[in-house]
Image (cartoon, rainbow, N blue to C red; front, top):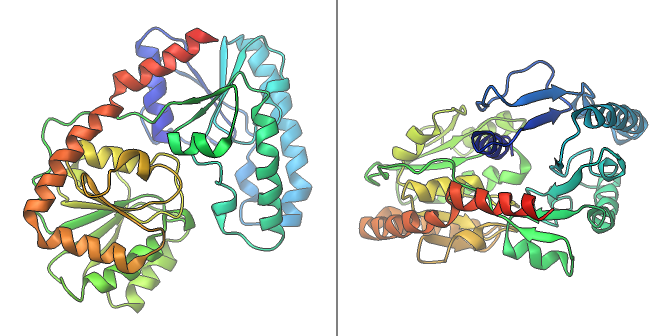
Length: 358
């Protein structure tokens, strides 16, 4: 989400818009992705994340106080800024931002699918909370002037909504040189979280290693499950073949050196890694999770779509691409051509048309 936001904000400011980004938990840290110096940034210092990892009861006690602080500070700032359009990214402001009477039109965008909360896989009282919040989403959405989803697939899940629009994520770069697809390297990219399913991928790689020990897998990212994933790698004696790699702002070099990208996510919105991999001409093996992969990949053309959670088929399709260089090259060419649907100019034109319609 951070990269998508940065790319969108930078594009808009270059095209004559005034752009302000408001956060709640920045805590003095610089943005990971570069922002144009003309973009105004404010942090409300609500600090929701300081309660992460704490009990449900602890969060239940503190959340209303943080919500009240958030609403109070955001209301004051928006009334001072007098923006024409305010966009919520479906975070902690979503339940009250439409009640702030600052004169702006309110737009909501979601970077996951309708089933986001249900796919967290949480248990007990957390599961009940996720179910309840999912049930109330549709009522909240109705208060916004526009609701933007990333895929046609997800639009279908929401049913009949008069304010819904589909605008995919965009590619922020169009590399001149595609990957050569000669290196014996497979990559996966994302935060080390339950969502990304890298535990599935590590188990799949154990099967891959029964056929190929001359290829390596780099999982580029970071996050709370790093030690758990490393332990899984060690338990399966894959340390020589699977590497956890720290994230980098020079992601282009990662794509250039790879020959296949694998996505093992349990759920997504519209995964940037698939768009970027296609721009570099990488064939893809991806779970057909909700949502995104089906909107990007035609099975057997730019890559393979694998039934969700099926580790054996995931491994088999990776092996098929490893074994067949001609297939890799053909799918890589198709991927590059397909990526043009998500060009920066085309996608941002959709956003600007939406703004003009409000």
